[in-house]
Length: 584
Ligand SMILES: *[C@@H]1O[C@H](CO)[C@@H](O)[C@H](O)[C@H]1NC(C)=O
Ligand SMILES: *[C@@H]1O[C@H](CO)[C@@H](O)[C@H](O)[C@H]1NC(C)=O
Ligand SMILES: *[C@@H]1O[C@H](CO)[C@@H](O)[C@H](O)[C@H]1NC(C)=O
Ligand SMILES: *[C@@H]1O[C@H](CO)[C@@H](O)[C@H](O)[C@H]1NC(C)=O
Ligand SMILES: *[C@@H]1O[C@H](CO)[C@@H](O)[C@H](O)[C@H]1NC(C)=O
Ligand SMILES: CC(=O)N[C@H]1CO[C@H](CO)[C@@H](O)[C@@H]1O
Ligand SMILES: [Ca+2]
Ligand SMILES: [Ca+2]
Image 1 (tube, protein in one colour):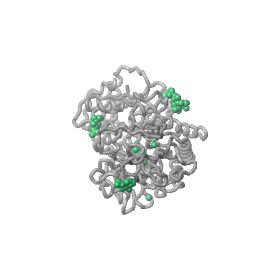
Image 2: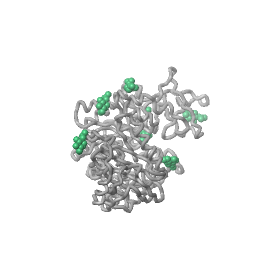
Image 3: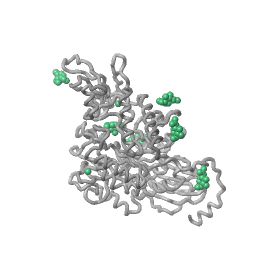
Image 4: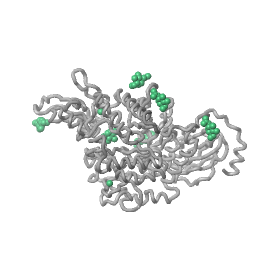
């Protein structure tokens, strides 16, 4: 602290603390956790086949420790024919051989425990693979499995006697009818995603029980919880008393009945029963903990749903639900052109909507969306990582965002994402998720240090010589070091952990966030999300006239750690972000 700062602070009238008291007891581990999503296929290849694997992840766990991750969730590693890269599971109780074995997972969990990182697995309950034995049994109407999936005979085609028409006009996420005919059973089955991903029939109690057994199986192997995929698609409306499924109304947006946006998904998404299923899954993890002790096992749920539906996932006042109903608003509501008031609205909207006692969470990126650098612009990478780390609650980072990886252009020939392959060379780029799934960039060596193969499953990003872990470790103001420093503050200061939170737009282009806690330093983040130089005062945010010390600055800033600024006038370059420390 500078002498000048001490003197000025001495002149300031004491502040009255209206909140914060009693807030500093340590919280349950997950409530301030930084969770890191690993895409196993692209993280680290240990055996040179060009595909990432569990041994590779285990080898790199020290890196997770280095960047201050508390827990990692692995995208699906279960046995799968890989029609949708592991989101089509053929055996819920085994590991996909190209990723490794159950033993490899056990080893990974053991090493993670030793160094203090929690491991979460991705549960994909909405469907299985059509190669799953449960589906084969259902197809053959084996006893106990007849209604494991959603079957319907459809209707005769008045124009063609050898054809059958599907039960309804529902369209799959991957285009085309959500119903596929099977000769063997002379019926259609429902698939909200790929035709190789038949939907489970959650109206069958045996299915519900089966999925709980899957959860218990993995909890017993020592994992710390689940990320649960595609929750809104669990239930479809029940058929009426004549066994008929209703057509969904047309959107009018397109005339193409094969397009997912052809119909409004009022009967296939966000059915009320899904909320209760999440509450039941919460009971499974809570009960497991009661019986086995140890730290809290948690549920993260994936749903792109309206805010009021998301809030119900937390619980309903009587029953607890998801610990972390993913908040995707930093992905879906904000981008490189958003103004400071947009940030204020989007962030405060979640804070204000949460039920009492709820823990906020913020997802900055994932495997289904373009990278931060591509959504917001490379010049905002530090700004967003700093924002993520100062927000209260759980922070979720997708692997590679901490080093500023960018989308990688993939040719039609190299495209593997089924959502893209179902289109054509002139349309795939708009929907392909391959761009954000390319191999992790560890170094400037062969295959960016990801593999030793001459052919990696997706091409390596062309910027890997500049953007990689090894290089960024050496450069003080790299994305990686900014991320690490922000995470360190988050982990090691009581104010970041437990402090009160205030966010506002200081003007059209500058956002301000304050975290404060009684008897502790106050931290302020100011950031210019616009494209011209801004001159602001911070009085809307801080009461003190004391100088403020820069504790972190984005790579776009000319300020250094230890510099001081005066709250009366702060000049910010475009995309500049600062963490400032002060006493109030
Ligand atoms: C809060 O932290 C302060 C200083 O670390 C400590 O003296 C005080 O007892 C704590 N209060 C509570 C409620 O934990
Ligand atoms: C009638 O339907 C069958 C089965 O879907 C199809 O193979 C055949 O081509 C159709 N015939 C005509 C004339 O469309
Ligand atoms: C909360 O959810 C449970 C389980 O779904 C349900 O039985 C109960 O009626 C709900 N309570 C309220 C207040 O909605
Ligand atoms: C819900 O969770 C809170 C915090 O973990 C706990 O105190 C409470 O007892 C839980 N409620 C139920 C109904 O399990
Ligand atoms: C970017 O976000 C703003 C709101 O934050 C929105 O108005 C605008 O349409 C978005 N632009 C794109 C290209 O999504
Ligand atoms: C919301 C969503 O689409 N979630 C997942 C559900 O399953 C499909 C198909 O397996 C995945 O691709 C999605 O990520
Ligand atoms: Ca491999
Ligand atoms: Ca379903």
